Amino acid sequence: MQGGVRKRGKTWSYFFDMGKVDGKRKKKEKGGFRTKKEAETALRNALTEFDRCGSLIDESNVSVSDYLDYWFKEYVLINLKYNTQQYYKTIINKHIKPALGKYKLKSLTPTAIQEFLNKKQIAGFSRNSVSNFYGVLSGSLKAAVHPYQFIKQSPAQYVKMPKFNNIESNNKLKIITLEQFQTIINRFPQGSNFYVPLQIAFNTGMRAGEVCGLTWDCINLEDSSIKVEKILIGKDKGIWEFGTPKTESSNRIIDIGDTLIKILKQHKTWQKENKLKYGKYYKDSDFVCTKENGQNITPNSIKYLSRVVNYELDIDFHFHSLRHTHATMLLESGAEPKDIQARLGHNKISTTMDTYTHVTKKMKNTTVNILEGILATQK
Image (cartoon, rainbow, N blue to C red):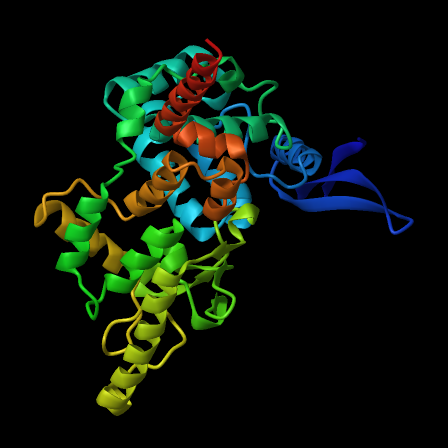
């Protein structure tokens, strides 16, 4: 690329050729520099910025912390959903930056990353959490190679996930028994704020955001199905809005049985009665999960529910437990794994089977027993 400096009157300016734009050759020139040296320095900076399409980061000295800020702004905020953005921000600010942020990006080694992940595993973080830490690091460093061209290769490609105890990982699914679910329902019976959200999650395996975002136009009581096409997500200062489901496969239709249909019909009647009862004080909406005054149930309300179940009922519980319990019950009862995958909205059946390895082990044992029964009849 051609460029240079020249003196114009009492000041210096730099110039360089930008090539052809719309068939015409363009030239960049900027003046006002007091000395020739200042103009030459500005020219080098301008050429570097032009070569890198306007990026203001100096890749030779950028720290991991500053680079992650750049990646978050240029990629995460543009391409990922709000909840994922907030989760990535937490991972970056609370975990990655304190451990690795001080390093220069070009000096970050596989050893430093491996030690970071190992320490998180030793500290008691779950496989899923450590995997997410690694995922954010790996994704950001891959982008640093291409398209950003800050480094020539990613040090994360030489790092391995620490080994985890599979049994401990499965126990963290917090699967509850039918008796425990009945105890929860006795605490939150029909007419309480959480009765319907609990029943929907237990009978469908839907996620909390999907349950809270459910509207009546997505429920077909005649066809006995629920269409999952949106979630309720929280913005700052108590603002809630609809978002798209977690993945493309999370957009799904779930068949439901007579038990849940009866509950939903009764709930719809209950809402109409409350609308007449509260009159102008009723918050009218199309939400399925509402309080008596029509105010919709939010994921924050669900967190309160989980706290009550844990501390008042002494049941190790998270609302997601209902999703795991739903899948476990069906798999143990002989339902087709492919059908479970569709109900849960997993993109791959391997996700379903890997998540519920404790169930698949039991299924394998059942298969062996069936085989032994067949062979016994031949003796």
